[in-house]
Image 1 (cartoon, rainbow, N blue to C red):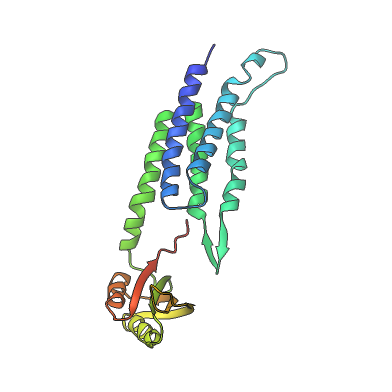
Image 2: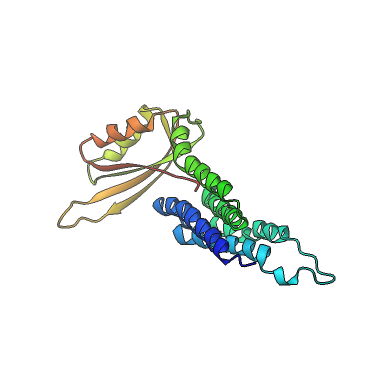
Length: 231
């Protein structure tokens, strides 16, 4: 039986669904983006199709027994080397977990599409989008742990003694300054000398209120709350 038409349709579905996940990772400028997710999903779908149809000419031969589920099991374990390469530790914080999980999920979606479970593949892709876009909004509404730290970057004009005021503003807003790093920027014809400071803050203060309070101070040129995501 010729399965080429059906197989191509399954590959196309795997391509499209994994591209959706890849575009979300690409939008967030993660290390594994559109190309990685599409290739992982497409490869997984092809492996499943090979497992289903690639040995049809062997069926019925004496002593030949085929188990298509073995290929799926190897996809699950084999994709781990890509995920392991995306996870790293920086200053006791783990990074890349969400991206590694999305690659693993893309492999499962590709395998499902290759197996013909198109509705399940589409449903899992929709669930991923819900997790990727809705859950961060929900997480930001949850109260922060006092031990959780965030990074705040502030640039200000040099020579005005503003660093003391910045630290005082942060502590007055309910934060504890757990770490501080500065770097000077030499003056140019277009701008005077500036200093950039990266503050690691912890505590129960409200970050959305601290940023405008610092931005309104004379001599401060930029304030940015860095999204220190694990993915």
